[in-house]
Structure formats: C-alpha cells, structure tokens
Length: 536
Image (tube, rainbow, N blue to C red; front, side, top):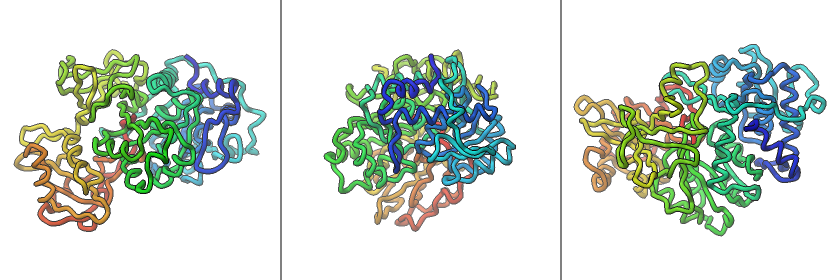
C-alpha cells in the first residue's frame, strides 16, 4: 500500500488541471498546484533536517495551505501531528513534548501560539504562507522551488502517518497513531460505499485537524480525485453561501451544524441545493427530529456513520440505498468487524447492550509511547471503544451511550442519549445534554441542560410533565438548566464534560426559565483539552 499522499500525486500526473481545493476566498487550487506545493513543503522539511519518522506539529485552520502542509509532511515520510487552532500554548506544549516534535508549522493570522510553543520547545518554526508554495521562516529567504521533492517517500502500511491526540477524558491526552495503511483504507472504503468519484464536489465546515474532517472527508475526497470546498470557520450563513456557490454533491458535518443550518435557512428550500445527494453526519448522535427536519428543508438524505479517532473515524456506515433505521448508525464497513460484547468479553446476541468493539484495517497502531494504555483497549487487533451499543438481527448498530456517560439512578440504568432524543422533540428545544449528578438518595440524579429557540421560555415543571408523557418516571430529568448555548468542542460536538454537575444541582426547577435566567454551565467548567475523542 502506498504513502497516503500518493493519491494527490497520481491525480496531478493524470489530471493536473482538475480542481482539488476551494477556500472561502481566493483562486481554486488544481491537483497540479496542490502537488507542487506539497512537494515544496516536503523539500523544505528535508532541507531543514526533517527525516522519515520525525514528528511535525501542524496548527492551522481549514484552508488549502493546511492540505499542502499536511500532504507535504506525509510526502516527506514524516509524521503529521495536527492540533486545534484554539488550543492554549500550554496544551500545544504538552503535545509537542509528548510527541517529540522536531518542527512546528503554523499561521500567525490564526493564532500566535504555535510560534510561541516552537520557541519554548527549542525547535524551528515555519510560517504557512498562502502567497508561496510552502512556508517561510527558518532563517532563510523563504523560497522552495529548488528543494521540492520529485516523489513521495516510500512507506509501509504500518508506518505511522499521523498522531491525533484524543480528548483526555480519562487522564492526559494520548496520541493515536494512524498509519499510512489506516488512512488509505479509510479513504478507499468510503469512496466505495458512498460511490465518491472524481466528478463529485464536497463541502465541509469541519476542522481538518480532527479525524472526521481530515481523514473521512479530506482524505476520501483526495483519494477519489474530487474537489473539496473548505470553510475556514463554521457559521451557518457562510456554510449556506458556500453550498449555493459551489453546488456540492456531498457534504459532511456534525449534528450541531445541521441544527444551525436549519435555524439559519428559513428562506431556503430544496431548489437552492439541487445536486446535493448525500450528507454525512458523525462525531455525535444525530437526533431523529433534526434529521427529519433537515431532509424536508434541503431535500437531501443524511446518513450517519460511527467511528473514533482510534479507528480513523470509520467503523460503520448507513447505506443510502437501504431503508435507514432512525437512531442507528448502520452496518460494519467492508473489511471491518463490529461486535457488541459483555463485561466478560463474550459477544452478545442481537438486542443485548454491551461495549462496542471494532476490528479491521482502520484500527490504529496504538497510542504513542503508551504501551499500557494500548494494551487496555487493543485485544488481538480488536479495539474496545468505550461506547455502549446494541446490534439487531440485521447487523445494524445503535449507539446507546458512552460507557462512562451511563447514569445509574437508584439501580436503574438511564442512557442519556435516549432522554436527549425525547427532549429534541420539544418544539422549543434546539440543543440538549443529559448528564448524571450526585444525589444522596439515588446515588445519581438525571439532569438536563437545554438551549431554547429565540424568545422561548420553559419551566422545569412544564418540561418534566412533558417528558413524563414520553419516558419512564426514573428517566425524566429532575434538574433542568436553560442556557444560551451548550459548550462545544472545535467540531461543534457538545462537551458534556464541560458541564459542572455541582453547579447544576442548585438550579431551580419550579420557575419559568429563559436563557437569561440560568447560569451557563460552561462558565464553571473544568479546564481541559476540548478535542472530541469520537470521530465520524
């Protein structure tokens, strides 16, 4: 299997004038341009002592220069360590030290942190420059044409291509090692199941430093030789404008993005998005009501998939040619094995709830320099995901919840996702998160944090009465907080760990609440890395 950058080189040789990338502004990049700029980056890296296997920290937003730097790093045989542009210097320093990076690439226009971190680490810093075929700095004149490489560095399937640091919900963040084989396998299988070809046009507002945008979207699009339009920073009006401008056939996002598009698209209808045949949703569970409303408004089916950073964002898919099962995430991707197992490791029969395991060519090599952590989750090539799920007789998977998110109230299991699905059916609720909070009597109590549509007001008792008509009594939230917006990570995934359960316990449930009446739990959130661990 070739270097994961090989695809862009092949497309550049075969169809150099085909459009590869479009940004918010500026001229589109052809595959010839992308190849030339990636080759220039690779040459500059080699010129400055970067050798195959060396780690390079890349901190940049979703712009064409990210792709040039990323594929330049891979073409040089080095390892791309991609990080959140919103990360604090302390967080980037931790990643840089842990990964042992030899060089940092960044963009001052987005954040000065990478340059500061390079100085602290004592390694060179390169500034990505959209005007040039690569980057400037490193004490030279900033030109690259003489040093560009002529072909990607040969790699083996098991050679590490990327280090993606997980969220660190259980301790410090860990670097998941995705290999060249992982990246190529993920891209190839998504091209197969979603029939992505060179004629497709994709649009996304996902961050490219995260596995969903980087592997499931960018790598898949580049593998196919299709074009990809990148929104530097997601906001619904800009995304709608890009959808209209570039007339995509395929788009990808997370549930909060679909929700935001719905709220911003009152004047839009399906005729505005003719040709959009597929929308891929991942990163978190998609509420059924949001799915239905989006399809009615845009005339485009949303298909869900399931995967983690540790599986290159891939594990299951919903086949758009089969009837979808609301709440499900489809069957195992070709070449992958997905199973649901009990605490004893034995596979459960259909309908049983247990931990989801994934095996196949997309599963990571292991955590960087963490042999014990790797042994905890990898068993004979099978990854223990930490997610609770159930599989039906057809092999379709439904994710019940994160294993650690399970709320046990008085001995009864409450799965937050089930309660959230019901809350999203309320006409005034646009965002919802359900968590467990300490309770002296029940051990844990069910709490809900919700954001309302503009101008709406909702009392705790009214919401409880409404929920009691749809849920068993022990599943009904006994604590309700209303906020302007729920805390989110860089992909738009709601961050439950940023909600302080102690602050929630004091919230009233007997008064009419609007966003101005409640304390935003993110104000009292514990600090931590915000990158979601889930991928696609």
